[in-house]
Length: 306
Image 1 (cartoon, rainbow, N blue to C red):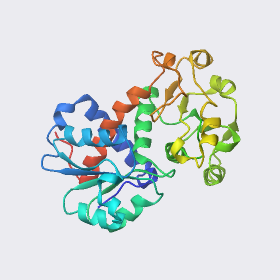
Image 2: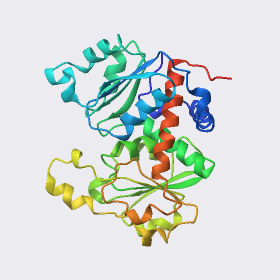
Image 3: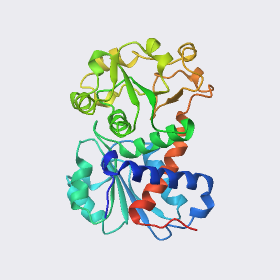
């Protein structure tokens, strides 16, 4: 039995196979409509979520399976003090696979250690978000045709952004990747991320100016400043308008530079960018469904239909 707790749980080769399966699903959805008949996924969301939770549920329904679970801690026995360990033991009696989102880092690891079914980390605090990373990798590979030899800019909240940390970890395994880390000093990537990049001799630079970075980027990964990670409202308000991508800034970008965003956005991407063919963030959402379908099949050991 395997879990997906960290993007590095799968080798580069296995990621490639997973993305190949997701691509085949994208082009042949009807072929996969019943491969998980009789299977159930439990979506255990202790934090609010729209895209991730509904994407997992849509993925399982598209495969012919069904869904159980809860959308907030308040609607589960966690409100009565039940531990994650006990919850996953109970859920293991009901479902075949579980996706868990929790505000505490490491919660998914705890769940996996006590589970008798595969566990997928759907986001744990500011730590990891591996299925968003798989979505990002599929989006980049589909639009650019590769996952190597490119310059990737990550902009905004690089300190608390779990999607950023996961993506940097995942892309660092591919040849010729260079990072431009765009943030105010208060929201720089954590030390452990820089230490990992230094250890692997992966080129990167940290800058404050998005305008200056734009011309050199092949991918721009925008993030929101996350109110829920801040200890006080004053700091959040001061940071949230630091970077806003608009039509004028897009004029400085390469014609084949794509903009990704894990969503939800607040004000960091102006709506006047949405009609730019390089704006990929809504296509990214759709790719996420196919990736999660492929991951569910892989963890359940469901064979690809002929």
